[in-house]
Image 1 (tube, rainbow, N blue to C red):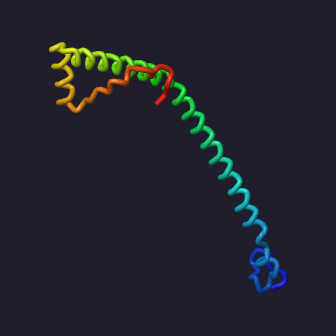
Image 2 (image 1 turned 90 degrees about the vertical axis):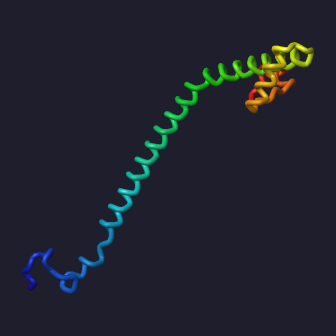
Image 3 (image 1 turned 180 degrees about the vertical axis):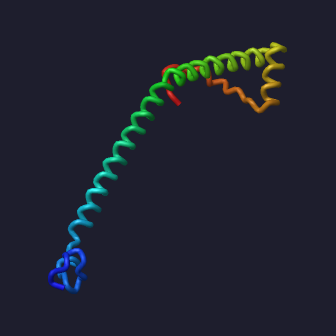
Length: 116
């Protein structure tokens, strides 16, 4: 069996065949490095997409805060009119209370420039 090719020898006849873990370990390390690099590029791509989405919503958020401030001021003024005896304002405030909407009399004051 001395003239048989090396790849046909059993571990008993080829002592180096069973003790070569370098190639499997090297392949494992290389695949781990590639997998980590791939994950890193995916996370960076998702991060940049999220940052762009948030930046795109900034204008709408500012508009909604201005609208909320205007509606709070309108509701506060309506509540003041109802307190002075205006029957239409009283009807509006009563209907809003029936629907579960409460009016904060301090909501329209000092909200400019503040972020919730």
